Image (cartoon, rainbow, N blue to C red; front, side, top):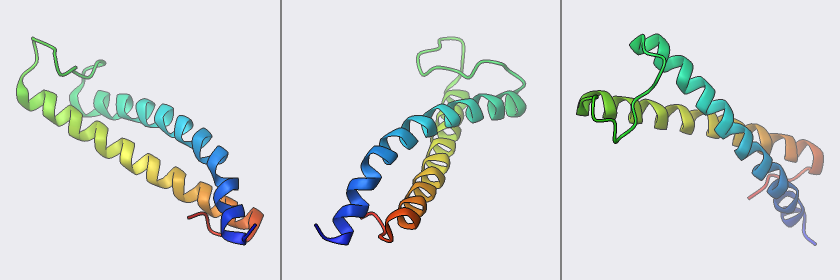
Length: 91
C-alpha cells in the first residue's frame, strides 16, 4: 500500500470523529455568538412565524459561517495530526 493511501485510510476514522465534534462545537459557538449579537437566548428557526426575514437570514448566515470555520479548522488540524503520525498528508 502506498504512503498516500495509508494517510488517507488513517484519516477516515479521525475525520468522522472530528466531524461529529466539529458540529457540536459549532452549534455551541453559534448559540453563544447569537446571544451576544442579539440579546436573545434562542436563535430563530426558518419557520418561526414571529421572526422577520432579516433576522432569519442573518441567523442562518452566521450559523453557516461559524460551522464552516470550525469545520475547516478541525479538518486542517486532523490532517496535520495524521501527517505527524503517518508522514503522509491525507488526500
